[in-house]
Every structure is written in C-alpha cells, then in structure tokens.
Image 1 (cartoon, rainbow, N blue to C red):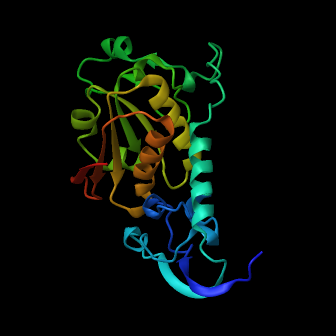
Image 2: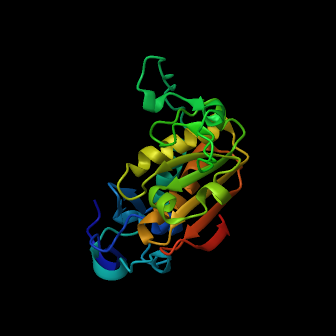
Amino acid sequence: MSPKKTRKIIRIDEEKCTGCGQCALACAEGAIEIVDGKAKLVGEIFCDGLGACLGECPEGALTIEERPADDFDEAAVHQHLARKKAAEAAPKKPLTPLMECGCPSSLSMSLGDARKTAKAGALDSALSHWPVKLRLVQPVAPFLKGADLLLLADCTAAAYPGLHADLLPGKAVVMGCPKFDDLPAHIEKLAQILSEARPRSLTVAIMEVPCCGGFAYAAQKAVEQAGVEVPVTVLTVGRAGEIIGRKAI
C-alpha cells in the first residue's frame, strides 16, 4: 500500500449532516454514500478533493481539509462506479406475495366501494387505495400499474391543507419518512415499484426542511436502479402549508 500523503480531501461533519443525499448525487466519483442516515466518505482513493459537492449541502456539513490521505486513484474510481452500476442492475430477489390471512394493514385494496358507503356529509377523501406506507405496499399491487405515483413525506400530509383536493386525486400514493425510516430499503422498494408497475409519472412531495430532501435523492437513485424513464417532479411544501417550490429532476 502506498504511503499516505498530505492533500486536500472532503470532510463531513456528521453532527450537521441530515442525510438528505444531495452531496452523494453531486459526487461523480461515488466517494460519498448515505450510510445509516448520514453521508460517509466510502474511500479516500475515490475523492479528488476538488469539492464539487460543497455547494450541494444545505447544512454546510461539507468542507475541504488538508490531511494525510490515500492518493486519489482514477482507475479505482472507474472500477468502483462499475461495481455500483452492476450491483444496481443485478436481479432482485422475487417478491413474496402477501397472504390473504396476513396483516390487514398490508392487504392491497381499492377504496372505491368503501367510499360509496361513507356517511353522507363526510369530508371527501381522494385516497383511492390501501395500504399507503411504502414499506407495506407490494410493487405488484394493481393500483400501482401505470399510475401517476406520489411519493409523500409523512410531514407533508399534515402540513399541506390541499392534500386531498390537489395532490391525491388520480394518484397512487406511497408514504414514509426520509429521516427516520430505512432510506436504502425505501430506494430498493421504490425501484421495484418503478420496474414492476411502470408508472406514468412520479411526484415527490417533501417539506422545506433539509432532511426531507432524502426522498428526492431516493427517487433519483430508484430511477437509476430500475433503469426506467419516468418524469420526476419534486414539490416542496413550506412549514406554513403552501407549495414553495416545484422542479423536475
């Protein structure tokens, strides 16, 4: 092994990091990955020290420091990226269908008939199916096939007053928390949904807080893993309940 030499290299302040994943997306060499909800430098040899990721962190958790480190290895970067691409393209384990006797919370169903029997005068709900938690939804569920898919951060449902009037109508929705849930598991599940169901579009609704950006990252990684072409739009909701941002990614 070559001796370390003093050079410029990325430093990640884990206390400030919220795991939003924007730095990982910006790192063309794949030197940064989200591990256990935090950005990590996965190999000194993959970091060129140029700092292309610095401006992507909303929390200022990234800086460039000079310290003894393994030298940047461009050939190793190409091998690293090739391994990641191969791993993402590898066949996933077949999904196990839900049993009829399974947990009622995970039984796929349309809510159309249930809504017909709702009490007169009740507030209208635009929710068209069950379940809605991303961890419970089966990628082969009929309501996902060719749907306009909405990936909804949990807090957004509480903050945005127009959820049922504006966001849910005509959409299949899956929900989760990009900060406290298992983000890699969400990426894998979402990639399976994209591959199996081939939705027409994917809308990601998140809060303005930095940790919510993890779902935008998850959507981009899932599209890459699934190898599908689907238009992705990110909606950002402010704490006061208004949509403050809308962009295609």
